[in-house]
Image (cartoon, rainbow, N blue to C red):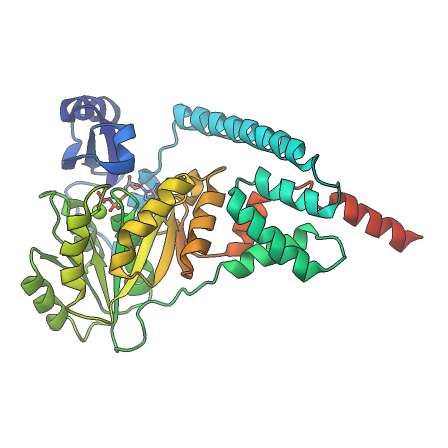
Length: 384
Ligand SMILES: Nc1nc2c(ncn2[C@@H]2O[C@H](COP(=O)(O)OP(=O)(O)OP(=O)(O)O)[C@@H](O)[C@H]2O)c(=O)[nH]1
Ligand SMILES: [Mg+2]
C-alpha cells in the first residue's frame, strides 16, 4: 500500500491532484484543516492510500514484512520535481552559508584575529544564535586554555551538550509504555509505526498501540491501516476512562506505544486535555518530537508548548529536510536539556529511523574550513 499526503487549499484540489498523480483507485483516508506551522503548506492536509500495483488485489496479505517492504518502497516521492526541489534547497543553503560567513567575518574584524575568531565565525556560519555562540566561546576558551581550538574540539564540545538515551520505557515497570508528543504533522504517527516495526514485529515482542482521539475523526485511519498490516492491536481512546482501561488490559505487553493528537499554536487547552491522560500512569516514557526543518523560534515555541507534559526525551524528525535549520533544532534540544532518543530521516517505514548520533549531526553542520590552517601548520611542524 502507498500513502501520500497533499497540502492544498481545498479537499477537492487534493482529490484532483491525487486522481491525476495516483490514478482513479486512490482512496482518501484522512483529511483535516492544517494549523500551526503547516498552515503555510496549505489549508488542508489530505492523505490518500493506494494499493500497490505489484500487489495482487485478490491475494490474501502475505507477511507483514513483505507488505511493509511494498509500503516503504512506494511512500517516498522520487519524481523529477523532487530532485529539482532538493537542488534548489541545496543552492539556497549554500547562499545562506555564504551570507552568514561574510557577516561573521565582518563582525570578527573588530576583534583580534585568531583561533577564537575562527571558531566564532564557524559557529555563526553554522547558524547558531548569538547567545549560544557567546556561551560556547566562554566554555571553549576556558577548556582550551591558550592552545588553538580545532574543529575536533568544537565537535566534541557540541556533541557533549547533546546526551543520548535511546531506551524505551522508564524502567520502573515491566512493560515499556511510550508516548509520542508533538505539534501537528511533526511525524508522530509515522514514527510510532517505525518504532512498532523495529521494537515489536522485528524484535518478536508483544505490543499494543493506543491512539488518543483528537479533533480529527478520521485521523487514526492511517494508524488503523498500519496496525492491521503489522498484526498489532490498536485501541482508540476517546476519553481518560477508555485510556486507563486500555493500559490495564495491555499491562502484560512488552511495549505499549501511545499516539497523541497534534497540538498547534494557541491550543493550550489541548495540552491540559492530554495531561489528564498522562496522570493515569506516571511511568509513561514521553518523547517530544521536534521537526529539524523549523527555525529556532518555532523549535523553542514547540518545546515550551509541551513543557507542562514533562517529556523525558526528544526525537528529531525530518532530519532529511533539515539544511541550515539543523543548528536551530540542536540548539533547542541543548537549551531544553533533555537527551535525544531517535531521529527520523525520511518517510520510508521502517528504514528511516535511527538512534540519535550527535557527533555526525554536528560534523554535518560545521564548515570544513574550520581548523584547516591549524592542522596544516601541525602537519608542517611534524614533517620538519
Ligand atoms: N521527509 C520526511 N517526512 C516525514 C518524516 N517523518 C514523517 N514524515 C512525513 O510527515 C507527514 C506527517 O507525518 P505524521 O506521522 O502523519 O505526522 P503526525 O505528527 O502524526 O501528524 P498529526 O497526527 O496530524 O499531528 C507524513 O507525510 C510523513 O510521511 C521524516 O523524517 N522526513
Ligand atoms: Mg498523527
